[in-house]
Image (tube, rainbow, N blue to C red; front, side, top):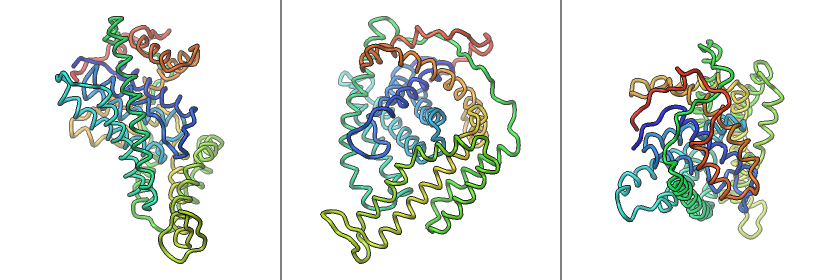
Amino acid sequence: MKKYNIAQISFLIACGSALQLAETFVPFPVPIPGLRVGLANIATLLGIVLFGVPAGFEVAVFRPVITSLMNGTFLSPVLILSFCGSITSCIVMAAIYYVVRDSSSFSIITISIIGAVAHNLAEIVLAYYWLIHHSAVLVFAPVMVLAALFGGYLVGWSTKYVLDKMEQAKLNAFSAFGAAVEDGPPAALRLKDKLKISGAFILILSTIFWSSVYAYIALIVIVIALIVIYGENKKAAGSRVLSLWGIVVFSFVIPAVFSTRGDTLYHWWIFRVTFPGLMDGVLFALRMLFLIFISAWIGVTDPSKLSLELAWILSPLKYFRFSVDRIPRITSLSLSFVPLIWEKLSKLKPKTLKTVLNTLAAFFVELEPETKQPAADAQVPTERS
């Protein structure tokens, strides 16, 4: 257990986000939206091992959010599924690590595999009970588990490799560096900003209760009107909706071709199309499309303002001794680190897993931003993990 500051944890979060962004450019052999190896979990594991469970939990919470702000999927189903999986995985890995960390049989690879399985199963369960309430979704559970076994092993091996490299070079602790943040977050939120973010959260939660095709059509029209009237960047909002079209198609196809209700309209092999199945597909596709439009409406907001909006929404957590003031600071620092990391990784030759891991190990001490924050900001009070 070591002390860490906001700059250090923000850098770990940025590393995880950069790895997750890099994975989006690597096609996965199984055509399931969102299915990836999960290299971003390296950052969570490193946080747990280097600084303790609280640090790993902060990485697991912020990493999906920072990634969604970078690729335009904030508050979309992609973020919600990733966030749920990340938190579940971290809780499972942290619990196991806490129990076995002093054991001679401790294996970071085993912990990673179990965490990866927990991550993918959490996403399947959430998708079934919230997004696509159809038994066909559960058919993908074995594939998700197999992918988790492979991905978990790779993440565990990669984490162990980075830790070994750090130990060999005596780089087993971060230096207390600062980060350049060009534009500080606004001092306060306007009423319009508070209404916007709270309205988005309420609309997302309302999808638990809506089960009418006509209701979702009406809601989509309302959100489109909000984007047209109040949208800060309509073109960016439209491009973000188009970038997630695959999830909408997937949400329609699964219930439509694996239906078990009603008279058969078409049947071939394991595929069975019925009218109730088609209606379920339309309903789930509209639900997904509605959530994506909500994401497009919110996601084009300036990230620094979004971080303050998140802090405001989560402000009741301060009564549970949660430091809400950390949210905008960690968000701003992490967003400033991601381009620095991405630039370093993009220049690697050859671009292999080992060269990436070697760079990550060296990053933790050697990265020095050209412009540092004032000393008052760089010397963040340390917290006991």
